[in-house]
Length: 262
Image (tube, rainbow, N blue to C red):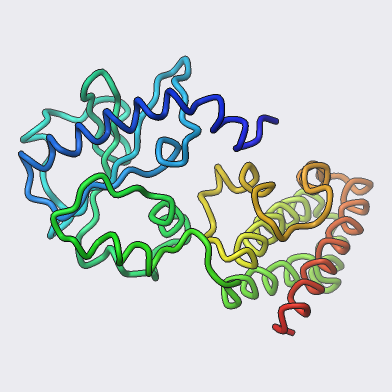
């Protein structure tokens, strides 16, 4: 697997061009639309964006007073895919624009993935000069270990993988359900790792890829991830999976104890 640092090196020049286009688009938006700020997020801000065979959409977040400006009045009808956000082309570059209201920007009760996106965002332009400081304060890329989020994931992991739950489904020979329980427990394991590293939790379609970037993690994270995700819905695989997930649960518990949470 190509790790993030390799992708960032390979795509450095290309991403510089994307950021230049994004800044030009932000300036154009600023001239035409009342807004508080324009943010660059996603792969273009992280530095690993690439033009694939199916194209590329650069992620922008437009902060407006109400979060509901009709962008089609300025930039025309949304282009494909147009879901879930407004999409358009500027300077031969595709953009998808998510709108948020000024009031909701600092509401950290939003989903973890949205907080993660804001934490890695770059401010392209701000009419409200408080926004950069607020983003840094409310959505730091790195912070102290996040006890509440980590322990929520730990408790859910134990619930899914504990003896009571295991025996319940084993007696029914519900191996498909048991495999699904393990897969949900895997997501809890990932969430725990991000939280103990002081990070927000990314979207599920990035959950595994960014794990190796975390400092606190079990040894051999790549092979461990393959084993955890390789559980099949049959008796032999489930029995092997139980042992693997028990070991992971022990690592999570040990990590929580080291941090003084248990």
